[in-house]
Length: 474
Image 1: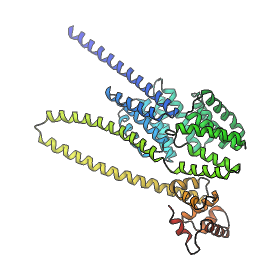
Image 2: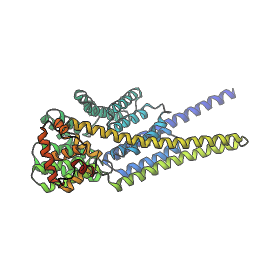
Image 3: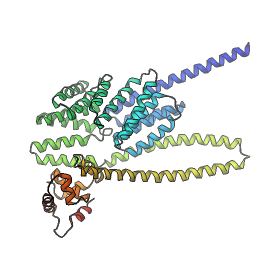
Image 4: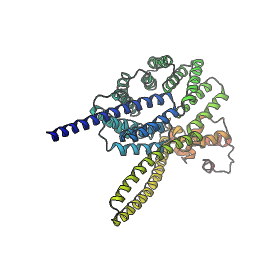
């Protein structure tokens, strides 16, 4: 009887401990993800970094591997917004290595939802769909959770954006409205207003844009949602030639951007471009050029000191995580050494493993560099295709591949028009006069006349080959 009693007592104690651990992990998840989203929306970079460092240490202390994965995902998401994609990939890889061993569907859904967004930023729309659908399947398998609706909102919201990219506007609107039911911040109103404005009746867009703008004002916070709402409202005023209101609203968006740009670094370029258009239409050429320059700088030149700070923070985080792993490894190696000290073959085996890992690291480094080259090659091919189609996005994508080229042209002649910049970009890509005439639907003679005017505007000597001249520019 005594043995049976002790066995039952042991089972009860183990069960209580397991239940207590699961409750602690749930509290960890809710607290971390709620605070992370609060800081992310508010644009509070320092608080977000500090939060995830603190929770990573806590997860390590309580031996909660999934908790570490959530910290990796949070910081990967931050680096997406900062367009620091290489760092994002490292953090995603660390998270996936942990979650491959996990059975928690909520955590996996969070991973695939954010990883889908990462792939969209790299122009992999099909991959983005694939990963977000994976997130949706996982969230549907999960039980009730305090985090489920928050994550479901994000999955619906991202799915709508992916359908917009696919030009399936009916499905996009369907998922936007699903997301709206789970959102009271005005973010979805912003997105629907933006969608309706771009793809449907511009008048009906005002309802959503105004709702989002009013909600942002009621909230009274200068955060990512207010940034989005003011930008969209400013663009609406701009389209309807309400230039005074557009200037006031866009300047307010710019002010919010100054506060939040360490998380929403990509946003400033849109506001600068809107202000450029505003001042072009109102005839203020000096301000128009100022914001054109600001737009170009924001779009193609990452703030060096900001990126250095971010990289330092991320390196510190990754190094700390690696030290944790090394610390645990050293314990394991010490136990093995004490237990099997007499087996000299173990030392030889360990040496061979380390050597193999070193070689693998070298191979991965080479693969990473090759991947970078392939990405650049893909961008080059994409730019060529857009040029051949005379696509409106051609110039924007061209600037991504040749970030300094347009700056150099504008330094020579700040008065170059957008159509002239596009023409110069085509020459930079070595399109022939015949090809340019075909792609832009003009006569060959018109192309030759444009070449002559460009020579004059850029002071290109008659004896200098125009293609050679553009080759000398970066």
